[in-house]
Image (cartoon, helix red, strand yellow):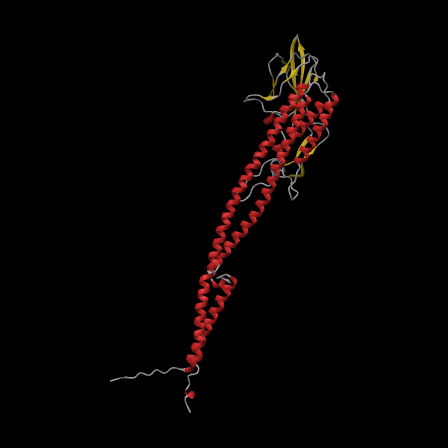
Length: 405
């Protein structure tokens, strides 16, 4: 026995279902088409709130890294310029030193030495100009922690009258940046307690004596004050003595001390040797050199005013060479620091590039569409959509009225 089962299908319901499915396919196709044209699978936060948040964080990181890279580029350019400027300064100082050596030639006349002194003045002006060099933004390359646009100022035409118009010190590097300026105070200025750079000259020299360079006493010793001094020789009951006066305000006069030939004169952490037999009334001036420029001025002054009969010429030249070498060492040390900062910049730049790559990868994973998969899905959806349209067109023709004659 065969049982036939009949199901009643509502025509209106079937049409509504078909139209709804076609609309859903149409919407899906439109979404895929938008993703294909934009290249993004998240075109608005509602598409994927979690993915949108991840993409936004990655975009923020990328923007921050790009900003840091731009700042690092400017800082690196400034330090590169500072390193080059220090190289020029060292070259000028070495040329200055050669002129000082040549001025000691006993065959030269006073006029010859004055000509050499003019050449030395040009080099001094060059070094002073280089010390006030600015970067592309007009900021001083040697401004330390902050300075005027021209950090190094000549106070007067007198030797050694230069000052650093700023705040001494060196900014430290961070994980994303390097300093944009070097400590010009450390590069071009002297510190008596560290450098012991002094200019020694006889105000009166009846005994035709000479002196060696000022040196630091072995530790522990009294602190170096940085003041200028005057050493006066006298006799007391036939015994040679000397008195050291600190030329501060007010002056500080020391206690007369017996002088022993060949023994150094020690005062305030400093030591000075005298060769010869100073006479009563002889006087020595000890002036602290405060800058590279002051040392150059002292050498220019000594050479331009010296004569072949001057017994102090060789002492002045030896003293100038020692002080110039201190200045060159300062500049070379600053140049070495610039090289360290440039290496640090390379390391930071490499880290920023790696960070940018990681952030871009995170953004791409969260936001970018898989183009191959999206094209395949689109073609599949389009095929289904075409089939739905064709089947709907066939179904809507089914009606009893089509069979009633």
